[in-house]
Length: 119
Image (tube, rainbow, N blue to C red; front, side, top):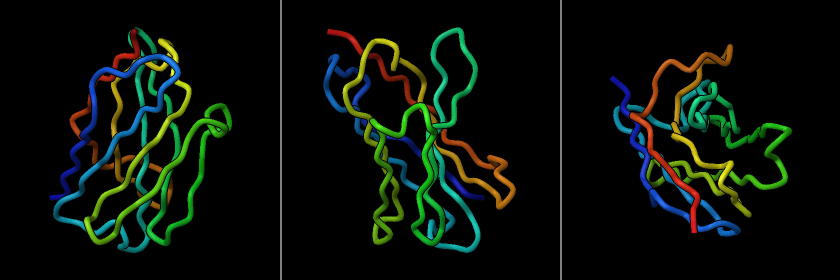
């Protein structure tokens, strides 16, 4: 069974860059035809898809976050990462990494990582 694990700081100061990594086990991030996404859920709000890096290295971003988001991968470590710049308290959320099927369904999720933006 595929396992995903988010890692990174739980507290980030405003205006800084949030950096998270997702480590994938029991499945290659280069395997056809999966995508690997970042999804977040602010307190009291719904899930928000942030972006995806596909098995072939192509990347897609949410239009609302595109200007502040960079997604990358390290295939040698079977990891993919998220960088979100110029964070504000509104970026406080639980951040999840997911595996996506070709239709866009998230079939495996990490346990989630609470990130708080505060000075």
